[in-house]
Length: 422
Image (cartoon, rainbow, N blue to C red; front, side, top):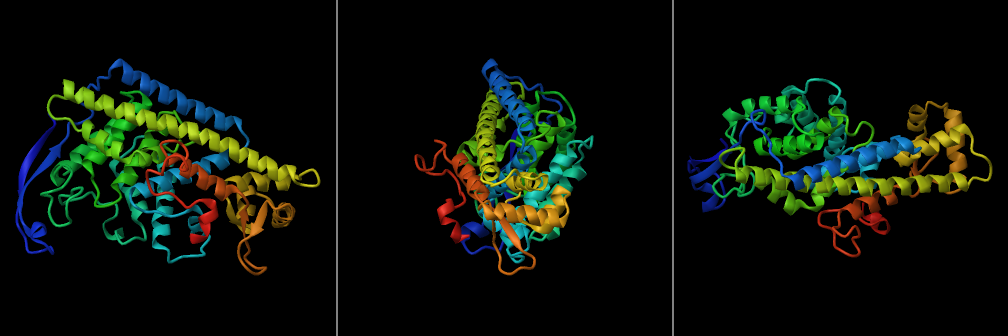
């Protein structure tokens, strides 16, 4: 049965203050394995999970019905990765990130970490079709996340030392949460991936439990939160709930960060896994997670409609009927707001002359603008997409869906009129 175990931390000589150098008692949490648990839910929680799954399925099917499905999937995936990074304290605006992707700022360490998160999220979706999920897959995700960062030396390694959240760097005596001891981690990870490869729960409930258990185990030295959030999408994609589009659940979780931490704590029950407290904590967590999923889908659907209207405005402003090349470039621009002609040719499969002609036509009507100097290696921006994307992120950061009504609950990109700060 799950329990807290009190241990003693030996005093040391490191640390600037007495509190950092002293020893003392601390409590380590030992969770129940997932594969042995029944996961009882009350009726209200089951209904919340069902509503969230219905919202995700509707979101997934609606994106297949609209023209810019790939564009939306790319941008929402980026939004999901960006928000996951923001939970970790990596704050960066979309224009700055896109410039780094084009190689304009190779020394931007924060951009490197966020781009790693985007690549890791993309890799997580590809893992969903590779059955079964393994511990090595999770290690590879962590390795991808930390590549090129100061934490690269221990990337992908399952921890062999005690870690903790909160308190100070030198001892866990005042930590907010102390994960399982390192010797327990391998067995808990084996149990976690076995649970992820099962069909024991409805897909959304399985994703929520897998995420909570991963965060409880905290198996890596760094990047646990980002791997844990990627795990949500591995489960949802593997179970077929979001075959096409990725709902930006991390955006909603980041907005409700305090509740997120509180509900994770409620999930970590003590005693009988089928007892009253354990069931109550599980239901609290599942209902909270379901609500975040519903909101993420709702706001992403609205974003898709606005993105589609923006693209229709580009095409409608052309003086003549658009060519196949112009339509292909406009479709790709919707999800690739900063690009070069070479990238656009590779993405659309069109020839360079066709792409250059399409860019010229769209530039003439103000749908495209060049963002660097000179005539060689030119980079272009799809006018309006970054602003639309920024507003989407800011909307999801407010409990009122509007940062003018309720202040953002987390770090957000600047408003479009402030974007020069990036």
